Structures are given as C-alpha cells and as structure tokens.
Image 1 (cartoon, rainbow, N blue to C red):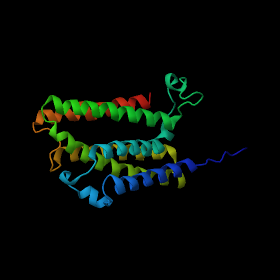
Image 2: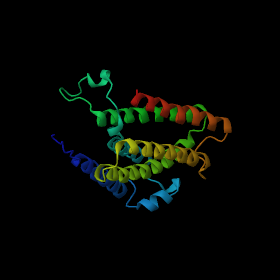
Image 3: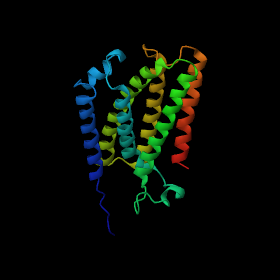
Image 4: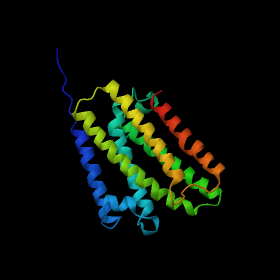
Length: 214
C-alpha cells in the first residue's frame, strides 16, 4: 500500500505572504501604526481608506481560500473546462479565490449604490473603514486556523463542522458590529437597516455558499 505524503509548503507561502502584505500596508498606507492602534483608530484619522479596504479584501479572500478550498467537493465543469492563461485551469483554491473577489466586488458596488439611492453616501466611507477592520482581524484568525488544520492534522469531517460554526458566529458578529457601532455606519432608518441586512448580507452569503457546495 503506497502512502501519498501531502506537502503544505504552499500554505506557509500564502501565510507568510499575507502577513508581509499587512506589514507593508501598515507601514505605508496607515503611516506605521500598529494593529491595535488601527483597530481603535477613529474614521476621521484614517488614511488611504478605500485603497486599504481593497487590499484587505484581497488578502482576506486568499486566507479564506487557503482554509476552505479543502472542503469544496468539485470545481464546476463550466469553470474547470474553461482554460485560463493557456493551459492553466482553476483548482479548488483558485475557484474560491476568484469567486470571492467577484463576490465582494459586485457586492460592494451594490452597497455603494444602496447608500447613494437613499442619499446617505457620506456613511459609505465609515462603512468601508469598519469593514476593513473586521475583515483584517477575520483573516488573521483564519490564518491561525489554517496552521492548526494543515499542521496539526485535524480530521477533515470534524473540521468542516467547526469551521462552518466559526464562520456563522463571525457573520453574526459582523452584523452586530454594523448595527451597533458608535459611528453609525448603517442608515438611520430601521427599515433601511433591515433591507441592507437581508438583501446585501444574508442573501449574498446564501447564494455564494450554494454556489460552492452545489
């Protein structure tokens, strides 16, 4: 019986790359602040907010793909059969990463349009600032989980249940932060808050989860 040894060097490369990227972001875009200082920083003192939000979204997508690509059953045929850059096709990691980038890109455009349609576009800047804080911390937590998963040999069947529960809890925390943050990043009216949570938070996540686990 031949035993195939799994190599997870690519995981370490991704983790190191993400950490180095965050260090560069703090050194350049945030003027050499620490992580704690950034989390406690008010919106009025923030720098390069939108650009930092874009980079944070990309790094979060990479970290999430590193951990959850192992649980995707298959890459859909209409994606795997379409070649990207010649002979290179998307594997499970690439499938999650690209779908996350498209997901957050489309979603954030709709969020911007949502704030504009209700004449509260001034809140969008605060929204993006709080969102990048949340996803930055979230991605670091996922990196720790990735180390445990790949190098402590956690059983995959049990791990998916644990990780899915953590994702659900993280989503609830995000909604609570958005609702009760002192900087009031969501619209003032309760019905707009309800509309935002249902149509731009819960529904997109359900669609994405269904797309991954067809």
